[in-house]
Length: 407
Image (cartoon, rainbow, N blue to C red):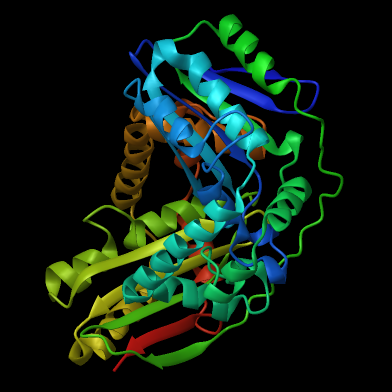
């Protein structure tokens, strides 16, 4: 992976991977998200993602939306607990148009109050849609319970009450406090000469005032074990169980990724899917997830099932967890598990839209991007003993939290 990088005097960085494709991808990833909100700002990072398209000093909302659509491209954004991303897909000959627009939106938005009020209604509908989906809401509730009184425990969307209070001044204050120039990476995957890209990038981002991050300290959340059942008017029972895990900077992160993949990752041959769905037919969906944050991490297992099968499903899951903590994987099993995760990484990288975010986030956090050969070496170095050690640390019965929705 022969990517190229460049950094402006104000700290904004560029990473580019040249590919000979007609379609190009580009975006700005910012190291700021909902965990950077104060208590009275709940939901403002996501709110900014919506209203940042509503007008700049140069463009009305219609002109922002049409700028990429008029040439067959599109522009969008997303927010996570720790990141905000503004990105576009376009024909490769429209690089300058795209970079100009992203720069304008990010640094010249005017946030008209009329548009703010309109978008609040849109997000309230989004909040209501989540409440209609217990399979999604249970994840938010779980994080709120295990990370009490911490921004990481709060949902991304905010509340109707918090949304109502937001004004233009609140948005500007949050962006000034958190949108640091040395915490921004502009990433690109496309067919453009790098020197030309640097020239365009510099034209639209070099005049941005320097605003470097002055403190590096994080308010690390304290994990709180919970075992809780919530009454919900749902046909299925929903369950999520989990524990704190490794941060994104931890040396054990990759073994945790592999453990998660084996247990309930995207493969249909994951242990939990083979037992709960294929063998017993108790669930339509069972999955495990590992979310590494800057200073902590969270591992969880989720499934939905008929209420009559809830207890038996939990017994089967606990049996699988016990097995993975006590029975060392054989050479062939381990080899297959490693090949599976290496293949998944390779296939994901073959999608240039996925690759864009991988490049940007890796360069933002680590200052580098590992190629497939490096990742393969790291995966191959994971031993069966390491997986058992990881399993016993993270799947500790005494620390596992459980949240259940049922009638």
